[in-house]
Length: 399
Image (cartoon, rainbow, N blue to C red; front, side):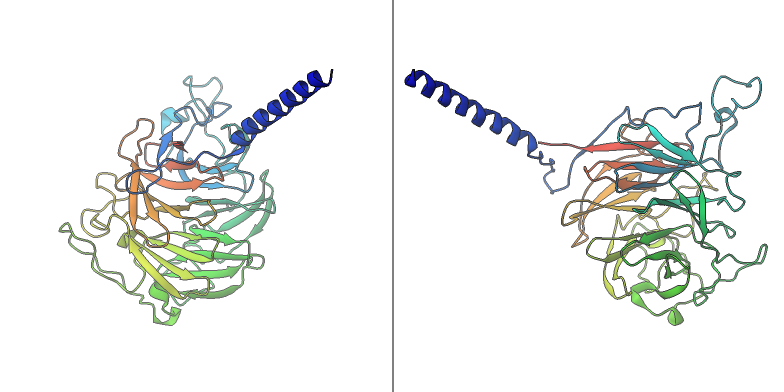
């Protein structure tokens, strides 16, 4: 009897150790694969997200952000909707297709719509040139556009209006470039919020401007390489003739400034699409470093086009930025709408390690990428404008 009980005890202990080994192994995160240069590897999920409900059409994805719940918010900007994309309107519908959908969409991790609202009739001052959406930790959603009368509007997660940042110029008044003026701004749509300090960072003309997140009061600002606002030139940055070399050096910021992001160690990253450059600062505007992304790409001047001039190729490489979510935030992921790639950079050195994407409309390719974000699991989300009009998910390749 004693022997039998001992055998049972040993078997039971062995089983517990075996199960613990299985459980422990399941709890260990699998490391992401990297290539020979140390760049993390990704693969596209061709079935994410799910189709939008209610026959809503997918339009230009100008902004993406992942919130603290790992929900994905994106702008479904319908300003360039084609007739066959919204021809399902009317009674009866003209074609068996789509209707104009809400312009702010929240998705869960499975790609289902959680909230969707916004559009020209949602608020009297709804932005006409949508650019940025940010959902904060307090349950509010910030939406901004780049047209002169657009500003930054604050809503609840289900779309109830809360606050208007303002700082609009008089309607119809021409605005000369004035990098010293801070009360009136002609373009406020490229912004970032700093919940640690309750501040809004806005990139405008050739400067970074910081305002109080609750009152809209101006606090500080700086120009390229940390120069004071008083020293910023109001003259245009001259174009250059591209010969296959990087653009000529400039101390001023070179428009268009396309992103502002803040890392956990309180570094501020500013993307200069007109210079293929990223400048890094402290939150007080002290210049720390700069580095170039695909520097030999044409950045401005003759032969450069935009969304309103699609017969000419686009220019510049630093469209949007996502910072990795690991403890040290080791990588920068730069969306390049000219080369249609996501460049992977080492955050500390700025060295380019690799890239993924490539021009095309197949799953995993990119066509005029204009938005990028990353979640806590390391999934990268990209948004495309012009005629691609889609959002894609790239998952880490694990060992």
